[in-house]
Length: 339
Image 1 (cartoon, rainbow, N blue to C red):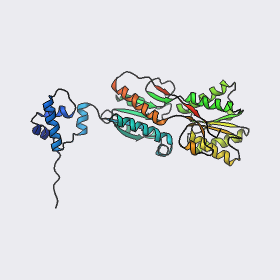
Image 2: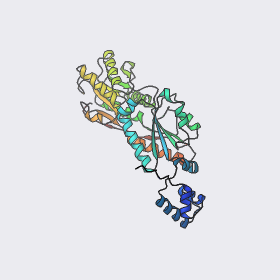
Image 3: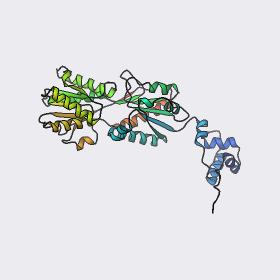
Image 4: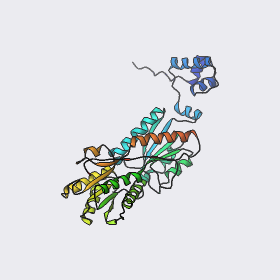
């Protein structure tokens, strides 16, 4: 037997059941203050009796809030779902937004996909604010979003001149700690597998590597520098290039743990013992660092904490129009068997 679905209760029906005007019922539903306690209770009872569910779009028009925050990651699906950094930061963002009663909208957008539908979606009609990850130096996305009147917080700076609206780890400090550790271990030929030069995480960790060498009275040797893309395969290829060019290398600082895993793989294939022949240090302290062979010495950062701090800064920015200073999170070295 087919039954016609009961139509959803309307705002007018709620008002009639409560014995109040439509405007009073609307103010109660949308959190308005100019309502008597008696009327408020009557409307709430009517909502419960009728099973009324407010229309989210209409409510957003009244309150000028969607209670949604977009996280835009400028990377491929393969990297976002395959690298532990992204899992940690999304977990931290999701938990912090849930605590604040906000919804997370996840958007993946590589360079070729950042205009058109993405620009049209990132407006106040859909979200209250935007979190951005994995930007490169020349990325115009933050400015375009701000032009729509939306507050923006960037995870990692889009460039090193930015002073506001970002949360980052102290990459320079962390890389310097790694190099100082290798110097203390008596390593003479300390190479680096750096990240992309057009990303602050890549450039600033390289800057820390150079500063660490300078602090030990050493000069930069370009033959000991290779760059990867933060992926494991690029770390393996970079290590092969370093061994071909400088067979006497006895240590390598990698700008993230996945590239360090690639370096370890190449060293095994080349018959080099770790750490006896070549010491290896990574950056991130991802779960894979513990399962590496040997377990990886690495600079610790907390993507989950970074995600929570990004949400906290965004909520502060949404509450007031003034620029909020960026936040830099400290790092420390976790020493394991690879060094």
